[in-house]
Structures are given as C-alpha cells and as structure tokens.
Length: 207
Image: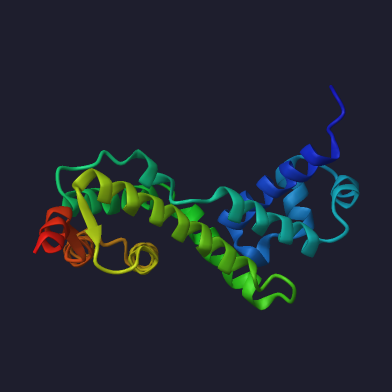
C-alpha cells in the first residue's frame, strides 16, 4: 500500500472528526475516537497535527470552504420570482431533512469556534460564504424573472440566510414539516414583495 502523504492524512483525520462529531458531538471528538474512526494510530495523528485544537481549527476551515447552500445550485427557475424563491427554499429544506446530522455538526462547530480563542472569526467567514451563495442566487433569479430588488441585494441575501438558518434550527428541534411549509410560504411572499418589475423602472424614466 502506498504511503499516505501528510496532506492526505490530515484530510482523512478531518473527515473522520466530522463523522465522530455527527455521532457523539464536539465533546466526544477525542483524539482516540478520531483515530479509531480514521483507522489510524495515535502516532499518525500526532504526526499530522500538533494538537487536537490544531485539528479542530483545520476542521472548521474545511467546513467553511466546502459547506455552501448547495441545494440552491439545483434550482429550476420559475416563471415568477415568488415561485423561484419558494422552490429554492423547498430545495434547501429537503437537503437538511436528508442530512440533519450534518447541519447539527455545523452549528456545534460554530459554537465551538465562538468559544475558542483564535477561532472566533471563522463563523463570520462561514456566514459570509452563505451570503455570497444567496446573493448569486438572487441575482440570477432577478435576471430570469425580469425584476430588480427594491432593497440592496446584500440586505435581501441576509434575509434569505436568516430564513434558512431558522428553518434549519426549527427542523432540528421539532421535525415539523407543516410548520416549515408555512414559514417558507410567508418568507417567499415577503421576499417577492421586494421585487420590482423592470418595466416599472423603464416607465418611470420615460415619465
């Protein structure tokens, strides 16, 4: 068997840590538990990382770089902006239903980072990535529907992310599909109300 490179070893340990946290929480992600999950020795861990904290820092960075609102990328744009937003929220919701454990890990890691000196800035970077994904979605949806946003796009994106965060936490807490559907309906109505047809802007200019 080929010798595993240091980079590959670190990545395998990070992925193993994610699985351990999904099963046992951050507190259960001991060095021994992680190497057991990865099928490695303690010596291998200490060869790759100086400490568990160093590994956790890389783990959070890995999540920040790789976790996006992926469900949004599969949206089929509807004939109107309200339909597109509602369908997008439904796609996001179905993704958290399928992988609730992963969503719980993300929240646990965020709280861990906020409480750990030196890691406090990572959650903001994570949410910045989410807002960027939401902004891209909203811009594409606006072009498809022939509308502009009456509020700055960054504000609309922040509203969308606030809704998806709330949907995630509520689902983790109560597994209530009916309540989630109601929230998504209201959110779609509220966000669509911020859309202004481009024809209105053209008419105003000619007045």
